[in-house]
Image 1 (cartoon, rainbow, N blue to C red):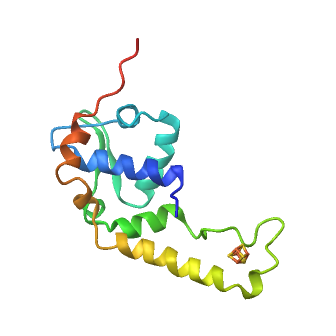
Image 2 (cartoon, rainbow, N blue to C red; image 1 turned 60 degrees about the vertical axis):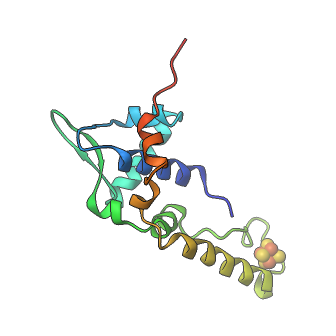
Length: 147
Ligand code: SF4
């Protein structure tokens, strides 16, 4: 099982924001730079997190991104399911479709394995992900210095 790059970026963003203290205000540019990813890609991931109610943008002076209370309590399994969508781990209905797909026991086993993967993540919350040692490391991340 391999997560999409989009899901990985969104998880990195939500972890960085969840690790922020009350006085720390971060922009999309800063989160992207700290995670060493393109700002445009990070912006798309943060937009999705906002639509899910996991992150919100404060406006005005002192504005910036923050994880909502719901986001902090959110199950990682739920969040990964939302980000990954309905994709199966194999492309049985691709072009051309697999000739076995109407009666394939492997497909069913892979679906069950995928659900087991998510179920392992269900008890974890976003807040759990930023407990020590991860949280302090996230807070210490800085954008790579340009030469
Ligand atoms: S063999 Fe089964 S799991 Fe693999 S692509 Fe075909 S239908 Fe899907």
